[in-house]
Image 1 (cartoon, rainbow, N blue to C red):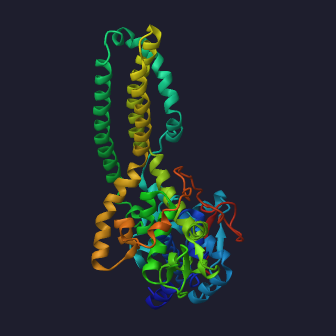
Image 2 (cartoon, one colour):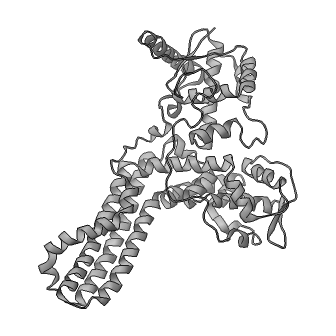
Image 3 (cartoon, one colour):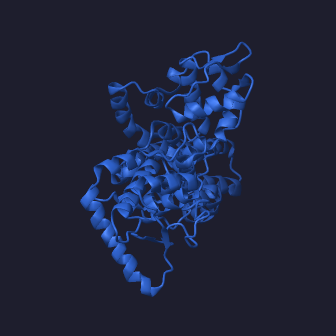
Length: 460
């Protein structure tokens, strides 16, 4: 192995300083990748081209490495400079999927694996063994759409009330008020307490099966802030707060923000805020927050986190828990609705029952929403709290501090500004993400799809 060349390759940067939409940001945004996974994919891509440059036989990338390669080909100057560093122009050879080429590309993949292991050790599974890196979570997809079931929960419950009423009619008319109402409310409380225990235990068990995953283990502090809060402006609060604490931004008497230090730092989120404010006179925080949320660097963080949420949310294990909760609460509410129907049918007073059912419906809907978000707002963040404490104990890190303590560490002068009354930048709807984004080939001559179109590269 040419260690001198490898060190130069590893040090080569694909990004220009303070680019708001540079190579890595664009790569992460278009593929909805996390920050750490994006950087890991870039390193694996460097390893691949290093092998291509230092061997005379054909090598072939993984699907994910090929996505990085496609993106780099679009950045023509950077790609040329990188090839100059390697000492060889690496040509991208698309696969035509002809049967005659199958053996050639299969051998190239096997050769790549052998060369990789000799030079770098075992391949990183999430990047080399999967077409979609989130498949490494090994979560079976549910055949049910949880969001649709949640939307129609009340409709299904009301529809269930009529057959329940027919079955329980003779039983319901034997129980007088207020005995029924007291027993019904107590039953509801017991069921909710049982479900809370069951849901937490089930989600902890689910997380135990995926917590060792490379992608989940390496979520950043700000990605975890978004995971927990599900609001992009919560992330922006932390970034701006650190700029205020470090005296790069000051709050004016009219509650507007003024940039007083235009110098850049190592944190790219802070640099993005600085770039925004350089182009404006003192601006309101509401305006700054809105502008920042539309920048690629913050949009990327939101999309990458949503994509992970989506995969867990759509999994069979997650769906089974939610469906059981909705089924139990739906059946319990249907008993109350049945009692209401029998009361109307028999001309009995139903005022108190009505006053009880309405709050129970609201409680049920609220609890279902809690269940849907518990994994992301509580279970996963609670595991990362220990990691955050370790990180801050060894080295002061404002991002992990902000994840741990939230608004407790926000400057007192900044608190009134972050409590503005506006709609959240993000929504509670989980958005799906495509596998290739807009990077699926760009201007390169690599066929029709991002991953499978590349056979490899020549060794000439």
